[in-house]
Image 1 (spheres, rainbow, N blue to C red):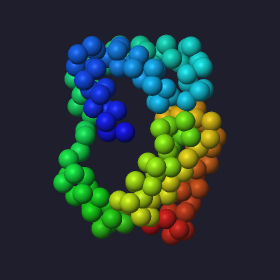
Image 2 (cartoon, helix red, strand yellow):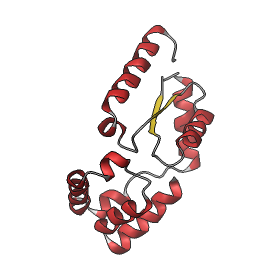
Image 3 (cartoon, helix red, strand yellow):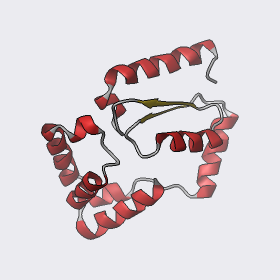
Image 4 (tube, helix red, strand yellow):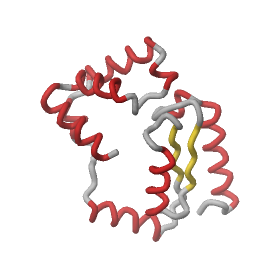
Length: 144
């Protein structure tokens, strides 16, 4: 996933944000079918990318291994409940959840069907159900 961001950073630097939008469309790894198949939503995303400064996009944090480990340790030391939600049309959700669980063994990972990266937009019913299930689990001590 990080390699993809690095490539998109280069596209933003050299070609601009509209090219980033087009690159994401070509890879078909960011949006799920519901977003992809809606010309209206895709046009809104295109406008959003057009209005986004490459500087803003380039400042998305790519953590150093040392800083990442400090954050992992702080979360684990404080037993912060954690949930990771991915869409089945995201790139390799099972692998990404497994990677997250390496750092946060008690992470509650969920893959929602019929959606990509925008799980709340593409599958709001299952998203809400997953979040409410997680919150109920935190309150009862199931996820800590």
